[in-house]
Length: 489
Image (cartoon, rainbow, N blue to C red; front, side):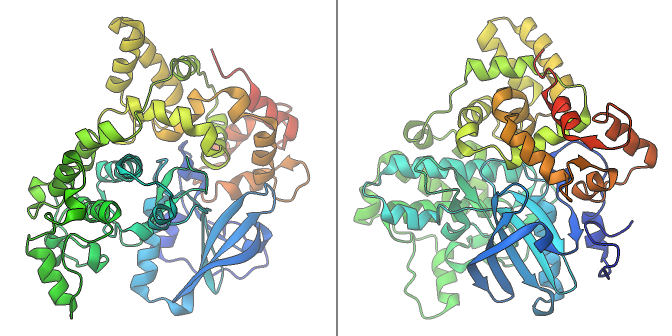
């Protein structure tokens, strides 16, 4: 396969096995179809702006997409400054993030490379770190803490359902999407995350010492190490202190304090918390990981239920979901691109609440059983609910996974004038129309779906879903008309 995104005269770097895996894809509708390894000059696509941060092997900069005007964050990693294991970790992070589809996990948009650097382009989170946000609040209470912790645990519940352990949960890896008081939490930095086999134990000591679980120190742990870390975080944000003595002379002494099982549950700061908060923290800081609750169980804990905002099902959203109709996988793919990259947090808010309320097992996806339960409550008729849910799945479950993903839900339950406003259609068209000449060629289509590994006949079928006059090129009107065809039955 040729270099994706590069110019014909460019000398492209050779790809490793891991890179090739990221640069190939089948045409399966989902947000990850647009996230592949691209090669070429990133400045052809982005305006490079101010530095947001610097690390030992690169910078994070604010960038602006030239065609759409969207602001994003770009991590630039110099190849000569990273070791092979660091490079492998980076590709592991990308491989995990590209398949993640959750409102509380940072979204990866693109991965580029040239001869000198890798570039990871993610959503721009300008709300700051959670701990900084909390210290600046004029009023802070358990209700605020519960609302934020609920979102963090929702992200972890999704990860753990996918058999992914984060392994470095700490306040600096919990960001706010924007300065807006209602902005969602985003869990970031999956550089040390690990996909495990079900029931498999991990042995690598990894993470940030102050938040590391006792069993990680003992080199025998599972996803429950993330629960411990969140227990430390919750204790810290509610009391301003750590649950164990951190005034130590050595790392080993700190580890001994963590493993001692003797935590500061008698301090005046901890005792001033509600009984429910104390009980939850103690359960998350159980020395025996088998006695710790899972993330999805904590989401049903009395403290979360009482203090955090209740997710409510919107009948209007459910009606729109039941009426959604789609006949084109190309249209579905583009609408998922719009939902994932162009919808605002405000536009997603009510949809997200309904999704979370319907997601009973908190795995970040909707099963048929969960939808039947929700529609049975609406109709008070289980047979009618089952019939409708079967129809919904044939229209919405584009990748035939047997579940409705978050982005599939956003596409199907959004108002057409929201997800398919003229502004969003214009932005989507410009993302495909790389040379800006007002039409999309097959090559431009392949570039944005970089590496889709299908034959000429299949490409012709995809293009024909838009190309109504049969000239092999997609004009703006053809693109817009395909998207605006009746999307509700």
